[in-house]
Image (cartoon, rainbow, N blue to C red; front, side, top):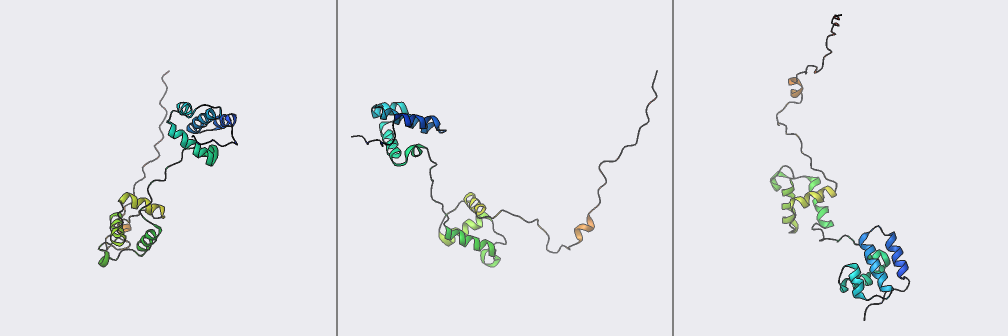
Length: 181
């Protein structure tokens, strides 16, 4: 025995909702349900919707629970994030304190170093791209300082700079050529 369709709607109401809908698949589903309200069989409604009878049954269940809004396609949630709030908090503390070269073996954090630290600390494997995306979501940006020699004097660069010549100069005015008349 098929699942009954909710009684607060009818075929005309479904057709009006399909006409107002900006979502094509939702409109198609509403039209299939309108056919059911008019007495069509579930297999005829499946033919109208271009799906199987099982999918029409799923539409009826969603429609009964949520109304026309239940027939809109939703984005799938995807897999759960690998880094939890606890992992992110520990990672933020690590980044803020910076690496200790004697302990961590690096003088600045790279993505691969952070991925390795997360693996060693939590046994969670994270790809470089994922780490980059998570760090950007946490408000961190990849910054790299310009390399500077440790013994460089503070005014040494200014002493070697040479002033550039002006690229554009005003051209001399030309005399008008005598006309040949």
